[in-house]
Length: 228
Image 1: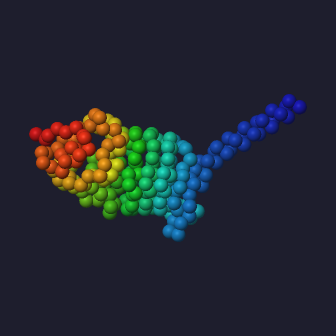
Image 2: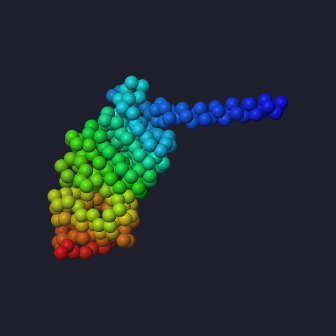
Image 3: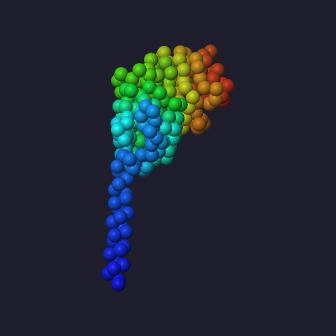
């Protein structure tokens, strides 16, 4: 009788292990919706290294949906060349990702999809992307005039926005807790309607007297020092 119970328990355990193993298959790892032009990834189960496939059910994966990776504990994500759209907050609170590469064919990113990725140090955009580029690991539009996303896990204490940038997008800096000094050139004339930073006490804006950046800092009560 006891032997029978032991065998039953072992079969249950083996069955559970089989279920866990099955979750590595792409149909089990991803929740998705088949659209008219391809597949949208809606949610992603936890795994260490996640490779988003080029196709699911024979259809190209064209979109990562809003908050699809929400609080995922993965340490790396590989996006497919078929990807066209990344939804708003797609990687929200994915704290363990240090680097991510945006494919050349991705032409639409809603807001800052990497908001609250506290470990993210570098965003890379593949050459040939018509809408985005990276400058030293920071995400910009293709012509380098709009700063879209500063990686929140970047270790630098000081960041100098390149000369020629004219706009800083909403939530571009978010929770960049390591940043202490942001150097803003006179060329930047467009800012969000609210504070650039979620955490501000230790951040100083280095600006040119009479510039739009100086006015912005004064309006939002940010610490200022003047460019030498």
